[in-house]
Length: 177
Image (tube, rainbow, N blue to C red; front, side, top):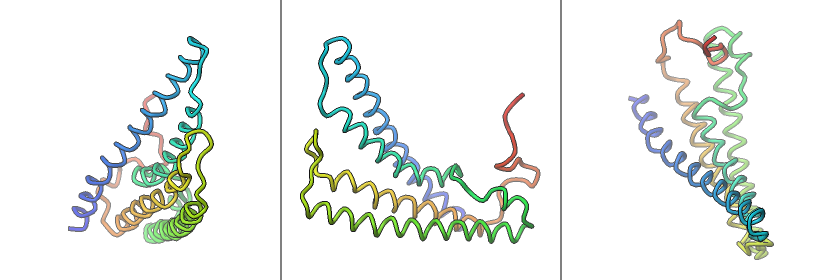
């Protein structure tokens, strides 16, 4: 039951994350391509291109944190977990998830405070004249997605393993020779 709920959660969130990343990457590649063509072919440039690309990459970083958790791509205590006996390894993984969840909550609160402060000042970006609170909104939104994926990963530690015992671990080399 719990596995099907978590899998359903992933089926809903994964396409949203993927769509956001595809749109962000498409924006970055398109704007940089146009900027290069304009600069080297027409000797012109877009005044706002570098700023937009920088802000989109920042957004990608914060949104990608949750995707990293979902794919097991974050720095973890893998070595420590691999040398601990079964039950203690699970406890270590859970402790790592809880610690990261606390950090995500801190990032959410600090991000909301920062967005509110910047919005109050009415600060805008230099080239695009975009309200900076929109740029900084990546902090709380990314924190929510990070927290959601950490909660999912934490809940999965209570499920029995779905892979056979002889399946390669995260730490083993699975590439061809």
